Each structure stands twice: as structure tokens, then as C-alpha cells.
Amino acid sequence: MMWWGHNDMGGWGYAPMGLSTLVFWGLVITAVVLAARYVGRTACLGSASPPPTAEELLAQRYARGEIDTQEYHSRLDTLRGRHDHPVDG
Image (tube, rainbow, N blue to C red; front, side, top):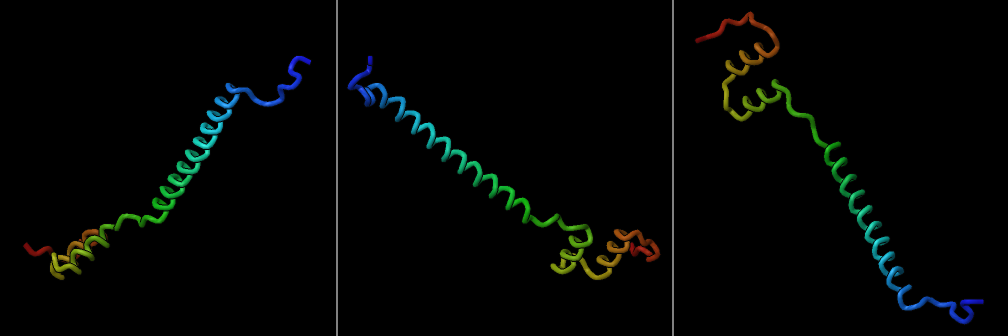
């Protein structure tokens, strides 16, 4: 038996073991961080509301008082494709 009495690791055996342990835990932590970022990003994107339509934007401008009632109805009719109301210049 060539290794009789030498059943433990020598001095150089601890270096690869320690290095491989650091690499292993580094990979585990990196995977957890990347997974958390991915889940956070998809959850944020999934809960975003769609952009407002042109009619909703027009209603918001009317509610804020930026346009009057006549202009609101005129623009609303234009958006909906109705042109039977005369346009006041």
C-alpha cells in the first residue's frame, strides 16, 4: 500500500477545496439574485396598465379644465368619426 497512514488531505488539498466552495456559493448567490431580478421585472411589467386611449386623454383634459365643453364634444365627434356637427371658427 503506497498511501498507508496518509488518509487525510495534505496542505495543497485545502486550497482547491476552499476555492471550489467559494465558486459554488458564488454561483448559488448569483443565481438567486438573477432569479429575483427576473421575477421582479416580470411582476412589474405584468401589472402595468395599458396606455390611455385618445378618448381617455381627451376626457382627462376636459376634467382638468384645459378645454371647454364645446371643444370636448367637437374633438370627441372627430375621434369617433362623426362629422355632422358644424365646426365653429
